[in-house]
Length: 591
Image 1 (spheres, rainbow, N blue to C red):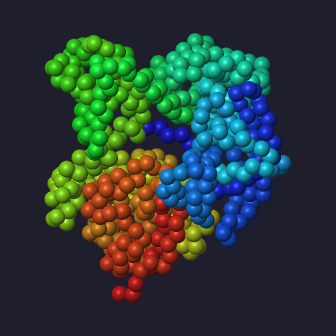
Image 2: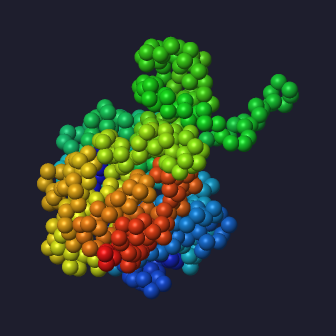
Image 3: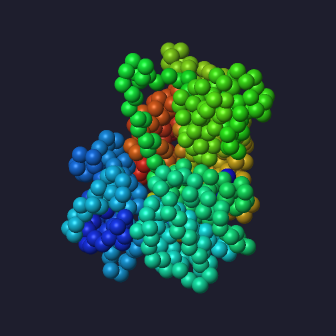
């Protein structure tokens, strides 16, 4: 899938104070922030760069706490990134800077006041002198050069980004603007130019069709559009489909982002009396049956069929070449989980089904690498007794063996390295590059590191190293104009680098990898994901899946040091980079 180009920024925790508070409309409050930490400063002896938010839809994450103890909810600052330890009281919300004035040292955030979220509650009470902590932005999107006109669409939460685009005009093209608002009082003055259009649509909150209908009603201008939209997540699903499927806008020219997620309305209380007693609520461990039913529905194409609209159950079964009774059994389970809705014999996508249809990452939980790891859990008990990975026990070979022979599996593993650009912003400062003229790089993140290394001052050659199948995946991603060489065996080099190479290998396979690197270079750098992300609600589950996949619990730096010693290396330095990723530098021990 085509990706947007990004310019990454060092992730820095900043403490600022409210300088001014102004109500832009009765429904939106502008908070102006200021303070020395918007400039360059030091935290715990670490130099931090000045704040910057160069692009119109950059976002920062403000950090609040449900119990008021913000200090315990803050991330840990690293030299070039942050780590998020678990914090049950943490309430993080993303906001787009409406204005950033570096000369004045002022940052404006516009916060929608309606709703009962923690950020809206904070905005209601914010006064000059109030303190706020935030992180970011982590990256800025870089638009393609061939844009003839822009479509900016969204609800009230998108207005800060839309307003900033129109004020600063980062791309000098005509613009069509569509905004859905909950009341006429939410209208704002926008810096429109000749040739621009704006359409305000007043719609009840929760109306998921309003934005899609308004976008469809626009006159479609000739030339290449860049379509940007931000709103409630599910209101954007039909907008994304319209743009990519019906209008065939390339994925490189579509940026559709859910800014918030509407919670389902509580069910009405049942009437009194024996006939209206509520169904008993399930207790204990959740059933795995809905997960398997959802996986089957995706594999059979049922949800894709429903993407075009509701279907009669018999017609849906016919389209999938299945027995109606089988589809009914699946649909009953899926309806209870919100994946579909049932109205008699009419089947339609539910909220969860809409998400699955349009979000590749959501689908991967049911049909991708993560799903296969979940299936391997069925063999976990005998695998643990035998001291082998559950993956190998259930599939007959290790995950690494599959990566070496299956291009689709190799692609999944390589795509998992997309986190690296955000934590490698300090790569140029690593002393190991000072006298390195030849660098060999392996692992799923090899290309990410190699591309960043090209921008480090000094002359050096870079070689991507992998087995034939994953190497071809890396070469395809690098493109024909790449400056990197490629090899299926580790060449002699000054430094050998492995980026995220341990996560899909058993301990024995890691030692074999390190031994091959030891034979090629006197120094090595490992970039590995050690600690589950504290922002993820599934961190504990991911740790168990790692155990099932490789036979090893999530490895610590001490574990890596032990494996490195087995291969003839000694650890000379390790550093936390952020988001659980660490850098480990090795030097060859005397034979």
